Image (cartoon, rainbow, N blue to C red; front, side):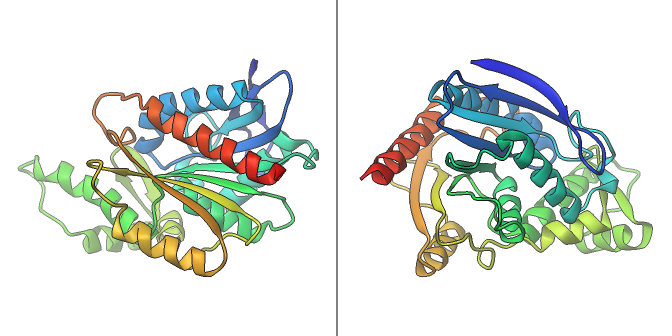
Length: 279
């Protein structure tokens, strides 16, 4: 396996990427990253999964969106249409037009609805599989939780007036940007991400989905929000394999956490999909 860092040319500026290239390629995997600090917390798990996929013959591309990580640009310049163009550039760089092999999008957290949104805009790009790690099902709720990080930080300072999420949104709307947990969030990006909702974003019927939800114990079922989306997708004839796993939410823990069981679960799902395709 070769591990190749590179900058992908994009209309908004170069995107930093790492390609995991096996000796013999059985398919392509494009990782759609999570948002903000969840990306930093998840990098080690993404690296572990990318290596495992490459060892199984999948050529994997991990990249940073415009304004994120080591890619060029500023986050306050970002928008969902811009990130769609980033994804297209990454897709083309990964596949080089060789789409006769299976292509999979692998999203983590907010990366899942971003991936499904992109698939709707680029149906010409053949994606046959979607691996979804703990998807954010509702962008509005997710961004409200993100804004609460700003509220939590202000609560420990006695010289600041307590605010509400709506007041923070009003500030962003009037001033254009707001710093939240070290990230400059723009009104445009906030509105774009709030509009992502997996109950209305539905993959094409040819896409096979492997969905992994983290639960607190072995008796726990997937979250109600997950069940709602899965039921909607299945009614649209989407083939979904919903799996649950008991582990730490590594994208949000204080210390870095390895979850090899999630990697093994993902590889097992891919193996089952391959066997079904052969049959």
